[in-house]
Length: 212
Image: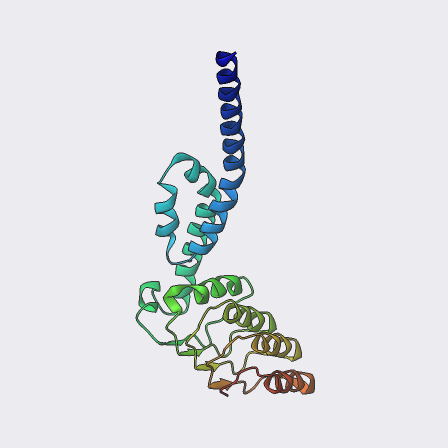
């Protein structure tokens, strides 16, 4: 009887180990995906690369995110060159003048990735005149809303064909915490329209852009 009881306990222990292993197999990809999301930086793929080298299961889980990040890294470096900078120089500057660089719609997601990066976190002055349209302004506002460009004090957006839609996006983001330290916003030569001005005014009344 004692031997039978011991055997039963061993079986229960083995079953518990199998259940824990199954739970781990389910949770590991989710955990790795969350870690990869936290480490995601278009100019710092080495962090995810280092994590991927830690073991085979993690390497497999990170294969697609790492390949995607490497592609984003190439696109970001190419856009920097298009705008007259090498990516390494971004880490050293608090000012960036990318006005009139003939950006197109496909450049906007890449631009957003650049401004989400730690490489541009120290920027205080950003000049983007004669480049963007409403979708570009919306992307930039979302970057700030997500924590990007935390030190930005001056933003130049003149001549960007920003209309009411872009102003609504900017206003909504600023109401929710975007551009908290922004002191100067240049919107000259944009067809803002009455609706755009109303959107900006409403955001200011609700506490958006508090130091302008």
